[in-house]
Length: 413
Ligand SMILES: [Zn+2]
Image (cartoon, rainbow, N blue to C red; front, side, top):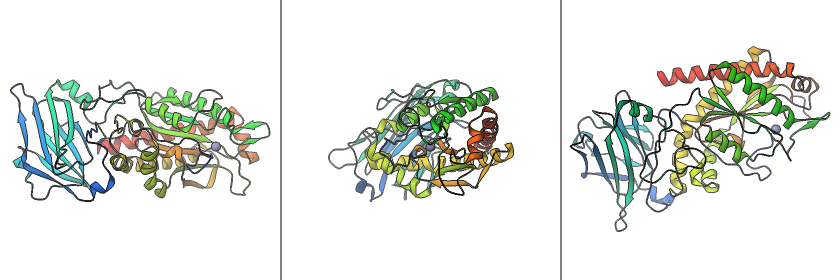
C-alpha cells in the first residue's frame, strides 16, 4: 500500500463527500483567519443584542451577537422544519433560549459544540449567512437571512449539503445550490498504484494491474446491484496522486472510498485479506495535518474553508470525523464478514488500523482492503484470475450493501 502520509512524499490530502445528518451545510467565517489561541476563552452570546425578525413576506432574519468569532455552521432540518446553527466553544450559560424566540432550543451536541434550533412554520430558504467580526472590539455578529421557499425545495436542501463539484467554490454568504439527488449512493473504488508506481511486483504481475482489473470487476458488480453506483479513481494504468483520487471521490459525491491493494511482504502472516481503517492516533492528527497542507476549499464537501484559518478548519474536520470514523469502522467490519461469508481467504488478523493518508478524509467513510499478498503463492493465484477475484468481488459487494442497510437503519433510528 505504501501510502502512509509519512511515506514517500506523495501529496496526501483529504476531500469530502456527503457527511451525514448533521453535515456542514455551510461554513462562512468572514473574519480574517483566526489563530488557535483565540479560542481558549469561550465566546458568549449577548442575548439582548440578538434577535429573530420575521418579515411580512414570511421570511426571517436571525441575528446573533457574540463576544468573539467562533467556528460555526448553519443548515436546515426537515420533519419538523427547523433552522439549525452549530457553534464551537460558545458559552450559553445565563441565556434563556425562549427569549430569542418561541420554540428556540439550545442543546449540547458534544463537548465544545452546541446547537441552536429554531422552528420554522413554513419552508424557508437560507439566502445568506455570515459572521462578521467587529474590527474594534472583536465581537462577532452572525446574520442569517431566510426567504420563503417551497416544501419540495426545502426537503431537498435539508440535512446534508449537495456537493458543489471539484471546481466549485461557495460564495461567501450564499448557500450552495442544491443538486437533485441523483440516484443511488456512490462508492469510490480506488485501485492502488498505477503508471510510474506499479506497486508490488511478482512473477510478472503487478499490483497496479491486478487492482485495476479487480476494481473494474467490482464496479460492474456494484452497479449491477442497483443499490449503489461505483466510480473508479483511475481506469487505466495511470499514476494518480492520492489527492486526485480523493478529489474524484469527492466530486462524485461518494459516501465511501474503498482502496484496493495487494502488497508483497516476506512474512509468514502476510497472506489473506485484511481491512484497514485509520488509527485513532492518525485520526487525531489528520485534521491538523490536512489543514496545514491543503487548500481550504478541498477539506470538506460543500464547505469553503479558504479563509477560515487552520484552527477552524481543524475543528470542523474533527467534528465531521466523529461521524465518519464510526462509519468507516462499520464498513470495515462488514467487509470482514462479507469476505468471510463469500469464502475469501482472510488474514489471521483481518481487522487492522494504520496511518494511511488515503483514509484521512474527514467527511466520508474510508477503508483500505488489502486483498491478499502478491508475495504469497496462493493469494497471487487468486488475484491473477477473474475466477479468483470473483470471490473478492462478491464479498465486497455484499459487504457494501450490508453496510448501506446498516447506515440507513442508524440514520432512521
Ligand atoms: Zn499497495
